[in-house]
Length: 242
Image (cartoon, rainbow, N blue to C red; front, side, top):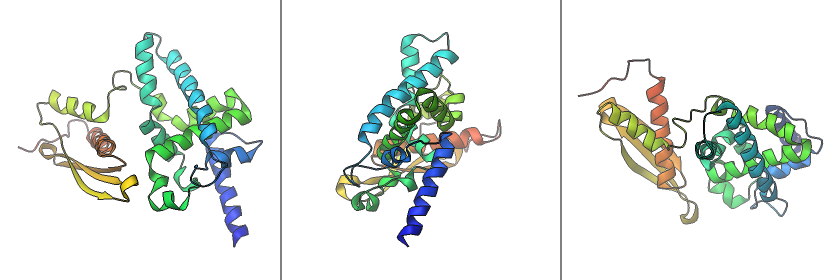
């Protein structure tokens, strides 16, 4: 049984390496990148340190090339929105890192595999592992693949504003009321609570829900989900309920 579990874990790590577009010469680096400090002494914090620098450099270089008219301050704001915890957690989910994370029993029970902070740190550690294993070119390829449309469709006019601000501006531009946010449940132990939040826009008959490790994080995620639903509707099909 243990042998089968080990083979399954190896296969999953191989799938992740394929998603990154990098064949590891030292697969142990990738395993370490997926290991949280709660699991054991050999964990991913040092790789996270390296990955943080590499991600900032790769994203900064990409923005420098794409937006020649932006000044330093504007570039910094756009980059910050692409390398923050929320975006990195989104990248981690796109790579399906959660099920691959090696977590201690306490973190597993408290939903650590879905916590933005743990996912974001793991994403940085994974990119750090690619850099140490294959160099800057390999890391650049992996980061561009993992970011995908997040980077390809980056809009300086939007990035730098959080989801709640963008949603509020969208509604106010159409003379609609601002959203209502409500905590509908809290779960987990006191040191690792999760907040279930709804974003309600009665005039649009729209309710979205999200969960986060803080009320603010959950509200931002619910606002982001509301924006996604609004923009997914056919053009001109945003019906206002009077």
